[in-house]
Every structure is written in structure tokens, then in C-alpha cells.
Length: 308
Image 1 (tube, rainbow, N blue to C red):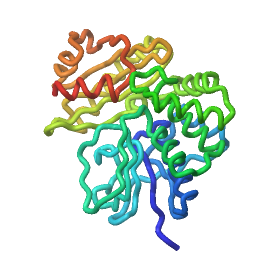
Image 2 (image 1 turned 90 degrees about the horizontal axis):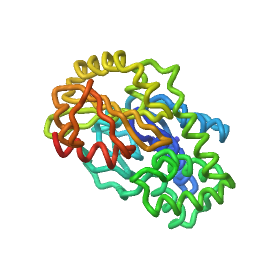
Image 3 (image 1 turned 180 degrees about the horizontal axis):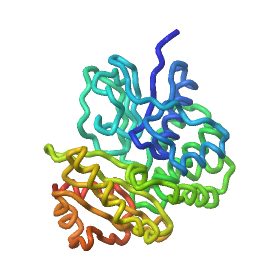
């Protein structure tokens, strides 16, 4: 039996990572690559579970590492420090991503698709269309869900006309009311009560590095920032522990209100000055309110990275 080609998104996977992995497997198989297999690098969050339950499908298998020479395709990420253990020695066949390109080096040429869209699934939607491959209801809902998640129902500044057009067409194929379905899905992901503080800061955390400076930007979505801030003291305890264990210079925890499109951040570490410079704000009680800020990729990472 031919070796499987593993397809996966980043660690602490979000809806785009999981859905795009599954969709890429479907696309590959429809295009003749039967050995493709979607897997995941972390737990499925509540928002993504809503999608899987809606479709009645199982989450991809969880893997913790890959062996040397394992054939893989990366979706929704390209940085090795966000990927699976052993990625440096894997055989990377392709990357489909919508983030910055950093810290990736391969021994052989590969197929690399990077587009500045709001979502990886928008890239995959275009791939279906360009190849003339039929999009059925299951993959339409998976891609629509990923776009809704990454663009916060097209309200995020990362949203492009490509995302809007893709979501419109996918909604027609799936025969769903995008607004109603999208709000139900997003709200499913904001139920944070039964998560520990350690789980909260790792639900959607991106590990980053610049010139030897290691930092993390984590984010959770909510409908009540104040409810999350009630746990600030305990959150800071686990953030401080994480900084020490991972030798980080900065940890930024963004609490994003998906209804009002604002965020409150908690920032700790020796390089909180980068956050203050980035937003021209003085942290008070290790916090800052950022009006209109909802996107890590476009509104948090670029300005913080610039000031590190």
C-alpha cells in the first residue's frame, strides 16, 4: 500500500486549519491523489466541533510527530515552529497558506501557494474552480465555515473581495443562510467557561520568532471581554509560567469581542515595550484596550513584530 500523504494545519488548530485539511484531502482525491489523508496537530475547538457535528463527520486523526521522509502538505501555516515535531526532516510536497512566509527551508522544490486572502479555504475554493472540479455540499460547508471563522463573518480587516465572492458562492452550493449559520458557529466557539486558564491561553496560540526573540500571540473570541478578564490573575499566572518554560520575551493574550469588533490584550514579558510602541499605549495592569482590532494576522502581529 502506498504511503499516505499527511495534510495538516498548525498546532492549536482553528477552524480554517481543520476544515482546509479535510478539504485539501477531498480535492486531492477528486484530482486522483487517493493516498492523501487529513490529520490534525491539536485538540478540536468548540467552534470547529460545531461544524463537524453539523456535517456529522469525525475530526481528523491527531498526530504528534512525523518521521523522517514522511510526505506532507502544510495548510494554513508555513513556519516550522508552528508545525509538527519532525517537520524539518519531512518531505514537504506543498504549502497552501495565507500568512507571512518565514522560517521555512526545504531540501527539494515544492508546490507553494501563498495568497493574501482572509482564509486558506478561499485559496482552495479557487483551486476547485480553476481545476473544474465539482464542489459538493460537504466541502462547501467546510470551506464556508473556515471563511466565516477567519474573517469573523466578513467583518475582519483581513477580508478580501475574493473571500466575499467565495463565501457567497459556497453558501449557494451548501444551501445555507450564511448569516444565521455563521452566527451560530461563531457563538459556539465563545463558550469558554469550562476551559482552564492554561487551556484558554493555548486555544489559539501562535509561536513566533524574530532575530532570536521568541514570542507568542494567543487569541480567544468571546461575546463578553469582561467575563474573561475576571480570570486575569490566574491567566497571568499561567502566562508567566509559559514564558519561563519556553524562554519567551513576550506573551500577548488577545481577548476579542466578535460582536463589537474590539480586543483587550494582556501582555507580559521583558519585551512589553514592543506592544506599547506598536499601539502607542501604556499598559495599565498589564492590559490595553484596542478599539477595532480583531485580527492577529493583520492588526497584531505586523505592528508588534515591527517593534521587536
